[in-house]
Structure formats: C-alpha cells, structure tokens
Length: 164
Image 1 (cartoon, helix red, strand yellow):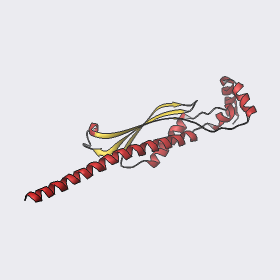
Image 2: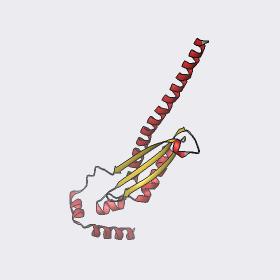
Image 3: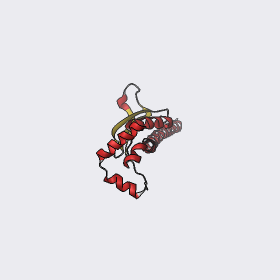
Image 4: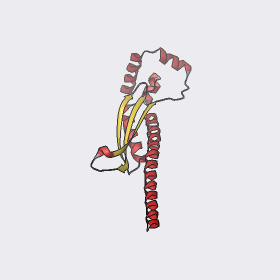
C-alpha cells in the first residue's frame, strides 16, 4: 500500500508541475508575441498614415491621427489570438513630428475566477514609436522648403487642397 500511494503522489506532482510549466510558458511567450505584434502593427500603420500631400508641399512628415488609429486597429484585429481579450489605449499621437504611444492590455487564458477580473493574469504591453525614414530629395527644393516658414507652408497646403 505504501508504494502504491507513493506512485500516485509522484504522478499527481508531475501533472501539477506540467500544468504550472504550461501556464508560465503561455504567459511569457504571450508577452513577447504581444510586444512584437504591437511593434510591427504600429510601425506599419504609421507608414500608411503619412500625409503625402503635406510631405510634398512642406517637406515635413506628418501622420493623420484618424487614419493611423483605423489602420492600427484593422491590422491588430486581423493578427490577434482569438483566445484573449485585448484592450487598446492610445496615449499620445503627435502629427508633426510623427510619434505615437500605445498601451495594449491582454487577458491571458489563465483566469482563476471568470467573474472576478482582479484574479486574472494581465499582460500589459506599452510601445512608443517615432517615424524614421531614409529620405533623399532634391537639395534645391529642400532649401526652399526649409527657408519657408511653417505658416507659409500651411497656407500653401490649404491652397493646394482647395485646388484638388
């Protein structure tokens, strides 16, 4: 009887250890995957949200806030894991110079009590991005744009938009 109970105890402890290892690896790999998903999605959405008319007119990179949020949410929704709940928060979106700050909270599959949200394991991913590009242009045009004031550039932009 003694050896039988010892065998059952060893099997039970090994099952608990395997369950614990599975939960911890799910939590750690989930955090890493969330970070790279947010990073790649934010970078791609920023490149898609660049205002090309403003860039050609003023020579400055500018992103459209609404277009960025729309692109980010669409790209993020197509690539997420369906077993988690995500909460996306945009803390700061600057148009000029292009900068975004995003925080994504995801609820892991490990929830001790479904009604009590405080006992669930959350993964929080924060990401700050600044648009960086390799830009090579005509030096004479760039000198003219840099000598132009920002107010002159905005008025020129309004006239080009009114024409289009």
